[in-house]
Image 1 (cartoon, protein in one colour):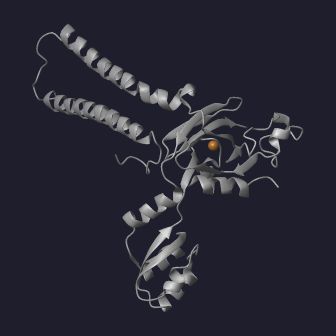
Image 2 (spheres, rainbow, N blue to C red):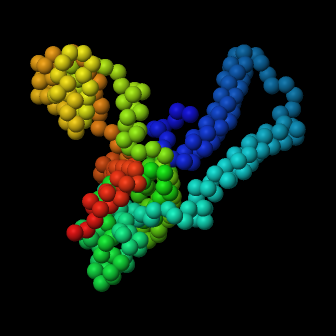
Image 3 (cartoon, helix red, strand yellow):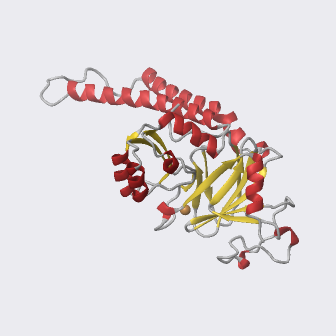
Length: 314
Ligand SMILES: [Cu+2]
């Protein structure tokens, strides 16, 4: 319904709808109450001569009504959201075939662990935790030999459920995937499981976004924006020649490239800034909290398996 960033999770749409219903209920109530306040302020302002008539001690009917209506609305919201809450947060609702992933938060990054080919996480010991061994993997345990550890990049397969077990090594953080509509506190000494399933890959989202949202800009404007720090990772020429420069894959366009593009005769182009789904920390956790970001890479199952292989311990 247009709140927040694009939804890419199976249950995100239901959360957005519920968000809208609650916003509508509370919004209408807010406007009604504020309007009544303003009307009474004007009506009974000093010097208006207006006086409250009769007894203001109490009106049982009115009091019953304004207690019953909010209570009813609250109950409606609570019961209406119950099944959605259960789908998302009931540990028994986590699909059995979900890909297991562990997340351990620290100031100011996310350590992420996969089981590796054996499907088992190796044993860990808190006292073995170091910068090089962020999970404290026990070298004695064979199950841990193939565990894959990634710093702040979480790769997940599209269309498959993923189970994430979240904890923290230092202070309370909050693991937040805005596009997936999931947020869970990362608490030291405690592990909480969440799950989600993503409906489109990063590449699909990027292609759709390119089609829908990108307007052509003049080469002069692009040069200015790049000079000011916009990171452009691909572009498309609209008029003039220069396809060979602009069309190159995984090209980072800097001011110098802009000048080349201009010299080649391109007057207008569409530029595509760097695009990724983000992992953010939603709990003020220290002085670099704002930098505590990660990347959620959504790949096809084949590319996900390739990513695991590429990141396997050597
Ligand atoms: Cu944090």
